[in-house]
Length: 252
Ligand SMILES: Nc1ncnc2c1ncn2[C@@H]1O[C@H](COP(=O)(O)OP(=O)(O)OP(=O)(O)O)[C@@H](O)[C@H]1O
Image (cartoon, rainbow, N blue to C red; front, side):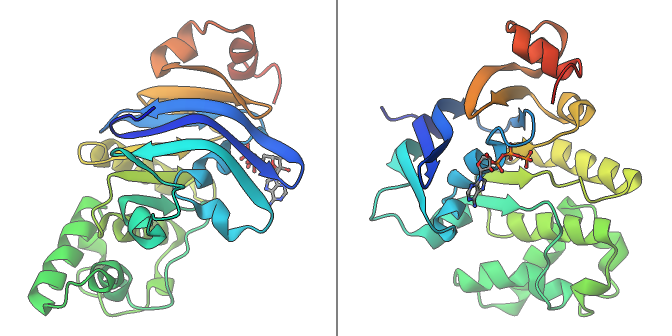
């Protein structure tokens, strides 16, 4: 079955014999934030990575089922993985800027995809830094090393880098878990701002964060989605007892 936007249909992911994701179907709406929650080892990161084929980089991974974006099955052999990851970007748990200048971190992707004019690249760099609430802090040091930024600034730079290639969807794997509370709040504000332009799918262990930033929440347990609904509903009146037990801290 094809769907508009991004969706997983009966997706299973195996590490060797182990089935880490068990026939999961989820559909993501444009310009919404979806939180993936659940206890450690339930498959959130595996599911997230399968959405832009980052699992391809791990040996011994096998995928069954389908993932569709804009009418294209991303696991089809004809799919160009570089273009796929332009469309579906990723921000990791630990900030991982390139060992380059702040400017080059952002210009790299657009340049790779064919933009060469300096003026145009300058505009993209400024726009992305503004959207990531980093412009004021960096405009006088664009050509200094990105590694001289604080951890929180580096993570916002990684978000700026991910939006520079104009993705439709941004995947975030616990993007604030390595950050202090002030930097965490800035990343959360950024998520709220960015959803005006992008769909965001965020893995988080922080229930308050999921409740604050997301429109929809999927509760994963042992490789399956137990419940997927509006975030308000999941956190105030979940349909499944297991969801209630998890969000009330009774396990996990
Ligand atoms: N590279 C790998 N090789 C083999 N098994 C793996 C690999 N990565 C994850 N797994 C297994 O797949 C299952 C799901 O792991 P995954 O990291 O997706 O869960 P998670 O919900 O994101 O966990 P956490 O919240 O602790 O990050 C776990 O049983 C894990 O041990």
